[in-house]
Length: 88
Image 1 (cartoon, rainbow, N blue to C red):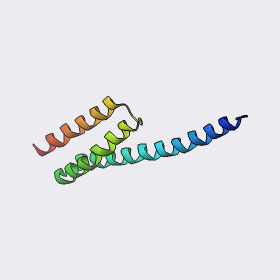
Image 2 (tube, rainbow, N blue to C red):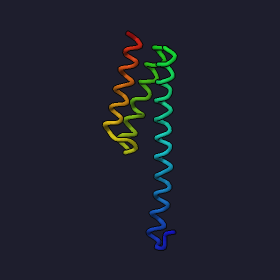
Image 3 (spheres, rainbow, N blue to C red):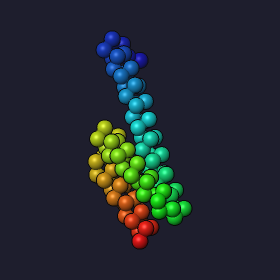
Image 4 (cartoon, one colour):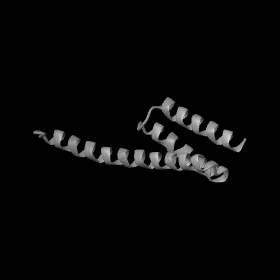
């Protein structure tokens, strides 16, 4: 338990930030899952649309520090390659 006023405030801030980060990460994972499902189903149009919506979510997560910048780029790149291979 925090003893000082500043430590109590820090605990509240950490809890609030954790909730925000969790929400952002969940939103990102949901968008990635939609792309994966569209690729698995073989639906080109849905996969392209899902990728178009997922890319900004992933990059936003990287910008906010939820995931590393290179991890975000890797995920988007691999998904884009899979969608492109699906359409070819």
